[in-house]
Length: 179
Image (tube, rainbow, N blue to C red; front, side, top):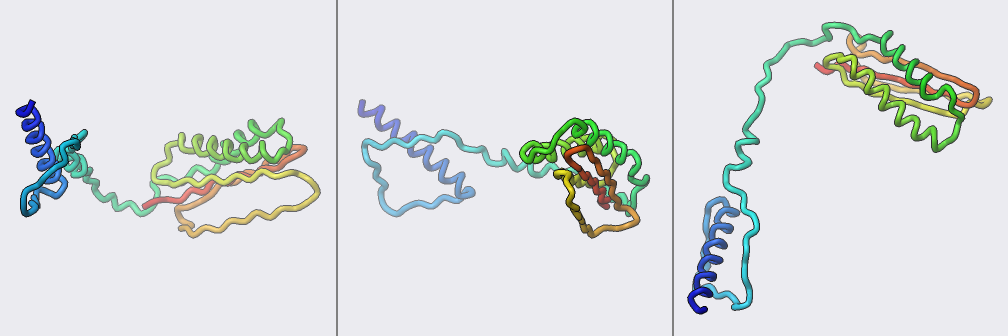
């Protein structure tokens, strides 16, 4: 029994030295004097990363060449996006009545559907922002405004207003060209 305890102490000490050396970047610091450990304590290492294991993955970078393209090759299809807005708003809201909680969820759903349908057009290098407002249709007026900083030569928007007997909806798609 005495020799097995001594072997376990040596194995635990060598594991501890390896773990502390790996965590200090290969530098070892030794304490002066003899090191003593209580008899009842036992150290174990559950996982030690091998040095250089994650370095290879971080060094793999894709070299992209500059395109020197400062404007879109084809204009943003505003008419097609207008048809998408009309189709989505009509299909989702035609038979709906205004209820605040339902409309709150419906704005999120309609926005995500519109964004997915516009992304399916595979228009390159445009960032899309979709904003949808749904409100109760009564005898009040609402002014909705938006301001954006963009290049009028390449950036654009598309908008559609839907109304039924109890609610109105306004959906905007902003297309901002990324150089």
